[in-house]
Image (cartoon, rainbow, N blue to C red; front, top):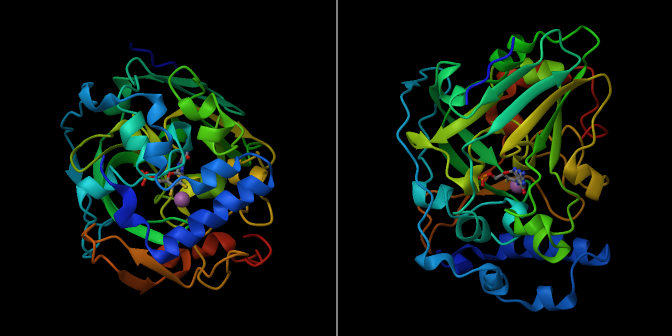
Length: 336
Ligand SMILES: Nc1nc2c(c(=O)[nH]1)N[C@H]1C(S)=C(S)[C@@H](COP(=O)(O)O)O[C@H]1N2
Ligand SMILES: [Mo]
């Protein structure tokens, strides 16, 4: 089948844990020769990158309301992370490595027209255009926890459709064992892709992957919106993956290509530091990152100065009932 149609101040976030983790990541990149010493001294990332444009007077990206139903299954009673926090505290290295860089540098990002292709080991390659993203599938709101490997977390009302529905359209062959995802590569629009300094030394495009069984799990979501509206660019507009039982870096943003493949595809953070970030990256309080514990997390609930809500991290980020069976034969210390 072929479907074709056409700033906040980040300082309040620099609490002790986050800051040490952040510095650790920067130290790693520095060791690898990607970041100059000057960058480590920079107090504020947004200041450091203000040379990429003073967009205060430029028009902000416009979101539009999305028709959707609310899932009664994929929900939680936990307090939602406020929308302003979900859209201003981001990791999207294509727009800079500071938490407030994506929201300040991505406002001019063009998401329409957009094409996402599903190809590789499939019977029927599929291509969706921008409008298809919102009309080809029923859209559902799901409230998921998002647990970053840096030990902070949010509770986010996403809107989207199951990844399985998209893959089924393409009819994967039985030889397909993995699913590979690519983010857009467009250095003209993404300052991080033009410079190692801005992009944290990541080899672009950002790539991610899942096993076919993981991709077919009902929890795996293709998100096209949050808080009732289309995604803002900093959250991965116009379409991104959300795999809530894995560390946040698996939830790849602004996806343009999905490929069914026969062997484990490269993934961005594993490629950068395979001893620290694995292919599976399931949230696991029992397996520490080599440089910090994963036993607890800072849940962002108000986004205010006193938002110091530290809670235990749950195996598979609290989704063990739905996904633990996928890993019964795997040693999760080895396959981290
Ligand atoms: N293309 C791309 N996708 C990405 C990232 C990135 O830098 N580039 N960062 C990841 C990380 S580390 C996290 S925690 C989540 C953050 O998603 P959010 O900003 O919507 O909360 O996006 C993930 N997806
Ligand atoms: Mo993350």
